[in-house]
Image (cartoon, rainbow, N blue to C red):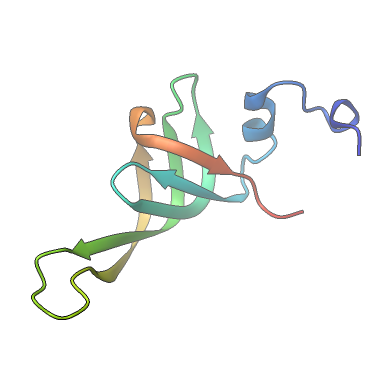
Length: 95
């Protein structure tokens, strides 16, 4: 599919087409979000609803034979403002 035929000519066009859709957001600090995108700006500040946050916690001080243990913590939020300087990646929904 030709990107220009779908209205995508620059990166923010992809974000604009994802409004009101569920998106995946990767943040600094091993955090990941999925939620419905309601608004964004040029700094990549985002407003999401129905959000699930996944945090990967790596325990390197574990004295077991496998010293690096990864724990996953999840939480849900009704609405979330994401500051753009922490955003690494925004992925649109699968189409």
